[in-house]
Length: 108
Image 1: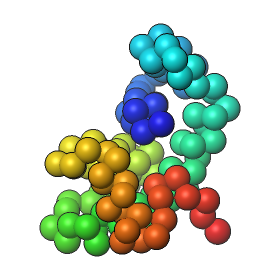
Image 2: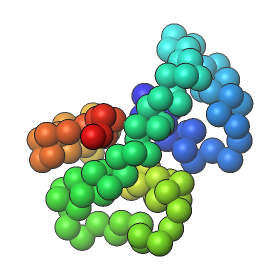
Image 3: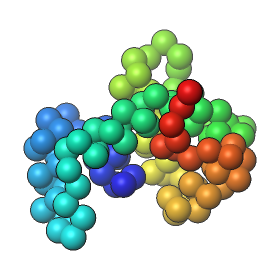
Image 4: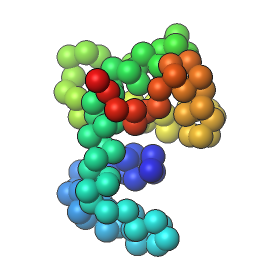
């Protein structure tokens, strides 16, 4: 799911065009537009939680400024996660161990 989120958040094209490209690459997954949109929306709602978790994992991490748009902040966080030295599954597990939440947790 992170691969899809990463590509869609970093993409300049439409969700449909990006999704078609990804579904051609990852033939077995065939994610629907609604599902990907749902998880993108969750990710966007959890930007502050993600920033807090990343800061706990690495206090020297350069997080996006507060005055940038949510989309730009999301792009920066996706790039930070993508460049993290550990694999995404290890990062996700470490994030969960610190915050007891996942990147895509429903926020209240």
